[in-house]
Length: 204
Image (cartoon, rainbow, N blue to C red; front, top):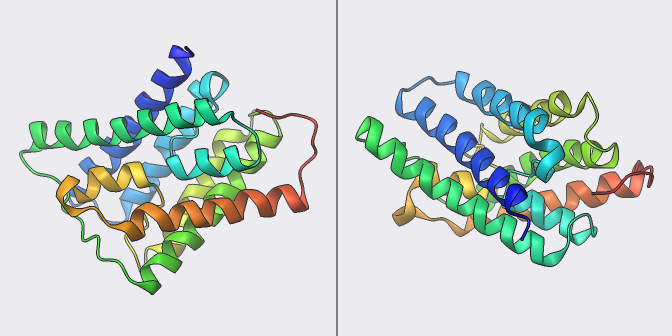
């Protein structure tokens, strides 16, 4: 059992989901994308060498499709990431007596926005993985998340992460669009990067 890796994914995803949820509950508006980007960047720098800091089931699935992570580890990562999102939801309820309650309405436009945003995020993540999580990885991945959120936010909530969608929408408000569209976008992003720019020197 790769306990450290799995716990790192749970902690990082919990932290991202809670940071986003807390900012929404406290109505911080456009500061939320920056908070999300800073949180993800922090965990890329701190636990990237432990788990790779996927912090997103869509990213894990996309990297697994390129054999950057084994299928059993990918399954465990996704379980831990989703648990992290659920824990963030309940901590938000405990501390603030409220949850973000973001609208999770689906639709083609929302799905396209979430997929496109996840594409930008995954493209940056693929770079970081290809370069072995070097000194620029946190900046690139955090910046890619910020870009993806800002691109998607005009149409969707710009969540780009099935685990975070649990925290911001709630268990009773799950949307297939917010669960599946980021996976599609992440797959395209990782495959596009690997088709264009992969060095093939370092793999997770």
